[in-house]
Image (tube, rainbow, N blue to C red):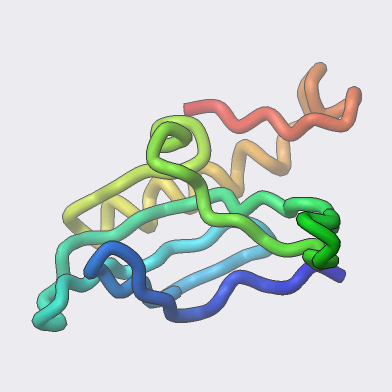
Length: 110
């Protein structure tokens, strides 16, 4: 079982708080240093396999998309309603079989 991504975490001066999650799809509210709501990110979390780095065992864990993965595994929205719509769209796409899913790759249509 991979180590789950935190429900709340801070990076680069922004605080991310999970507001909704189904399986590997989540919505995070993004707040600035002053606690002001900045917007919402809809993300498809990825499981990173366990590894050994410099003799240290790193367990399998969930991973938030990197900046360059936005548009593929992550989307930013100013309004929660828009984030909820994208969230529902992703979940709907993951339930429809496609050529890719039969080969073991989940295809999420934008």
